[in-house]
Each structure stands twice: as C-alpha cells, then as structure tokens.
Amino acid sequence: MLFLFLSVITGCAAQGTKQEKLDERVLKFLKANEQQWQNLNVPYEDGQVLHDLIVNNNYQSALEIGTSTGHSTIWIAWALSKTGGKMITIELDEDRQQEAIKNLTSLGLADYVDFKLGDAHQLVKDLKGPFDFIFSDADKDWYIQYFKDIDPKLKKGGRFTAHNVLQNISGIREYMEFIKNQRHYETIIDKSSNSGIAISLKK
Ligand SMILES: C[S@@+](CC[C@H](N)C(=O)[O-])C[C@H]1O[C@@H](n2cnc3c(N)ncnc32)[C@H](O)[C@@H]1O
Image 1 (tube, rainbow, N blue to C red):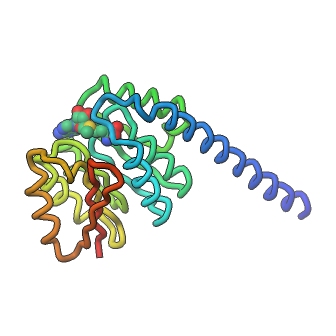
Image 2 (cartoon, protein in one colour):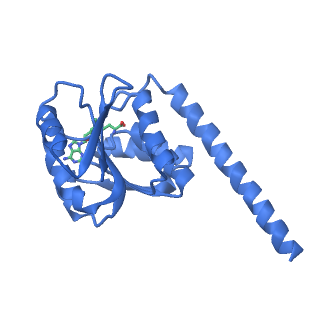
C-alpha cells in the first residue's frame, strides 16, 4: 500500500517536472523566434490567444487548417499538452509541412499532432471529428465552406476560429457576413494583433 502511494506521488512529481521542462523549452523557442517567422505565420499575440482559448476551456480535440511551418501549430499543440488533447493539422505544401514537423519534433510536441498533407478542401470533408476547437488559416475564399463542412462535427461549447478577419483579403468580408448570421454561434473578434481572429462559440 505504502509502495503504491509512493509510486503515485513520485509519478505525479515526475509528470509535473516533464510538463515544466516542456513549458520552459517551448516558451524559450517561441520568444527567440517571435520575429523570425516568414511563411504567413500568425503573430505571437495571436498564438497566445489560441493557446489560452484551449487551456481555459479545456479543449482536447483540435483541428488546424493551414499548418505552414508550424507557428500556430506549436501554440495549439502546447496548449493541448496541458489539457491532455490531440490535434490534426492540414497543409498543402510539403516543404512547409516538413519544416513544421521539424519544429514540433525538436520541441517534443510532435506526439500531440497528426500532420496531414494534401488539399484541405477534400480532407476536411473526410474528417470524422468530433472537434472542440478549430483554427481556420488557409485559403480565405474557402472559409465559409470549411465552416459548413465542420459545423456538424463541432461540439456544442466548442469554438470555430478564423484568422486575418481584420484584413482586406478576398473572402474575408463574405465570411464575416456569413458567420454573424449563424444563429447557433456567438461571434466576437479578437484584436490582439492587427490580423484579427473571429472566435465563434457554438451555443
Ligand atoms: C497563413 S498560412 C498558415 C500559417 C500557420 N497557421 C502559422 O501560423 O504558422 C496558410 C497555409 O495554408 C496552406 N493552404 C492554402 N490552401 C490550402 C489548401 N486548400 N489545403 C491545405 N493547405 C492550404 C498554404 O500553403 C499556407 O502554408
């Protein structure tokens, strides 16, 4: 009995240390590379917003559309390491995906991520779900269709987030008009950076 008790205590302490080491490593990397991302990656502030949404709501099943070289993937996977969750991320460009895999692997975050290579237009339709957190950051002209394909697979209380909604990019105005009219969602815009994230809570 005493042995069992000590094993549990020691196990918990080791677990805590493992997460603390991961946190230290990831934060150091994110801070050191804050200004280095060059492949349409999210700004640091937006990564922090995604991370906090997941941790604060204990989300455990995430989907990212548009991995690029993995900046937002790192923030999301890091959050999921704290909630005990997993994510899928989709990218069309193999070189960018390889760079993302390298980044996440070096940080010890790759186990939280299923990297899918291919066209998200089809892959998103094929995913089973359910999800509780979505980050849409690929082709903006397809945002509405991504939402339509994912909505049935998003749990109530889950959030669909879309990037660059404060920017004048083709498809964004139409998406914002569309999402504001979805009566089963409540949408706010996060303005932590000048990119903007539309955060839609499924009621
Ligand atoms: C804005 S970047 C993503 C940035 C990434 N979220 C980050 O913060 O590091 C958009 C990415 O989506 C990819 N993409 C565009 N259309 C796609 C599609 N139909 N299927 C999969 N990926 C796509 C692009 O190759 C690009 O790398």
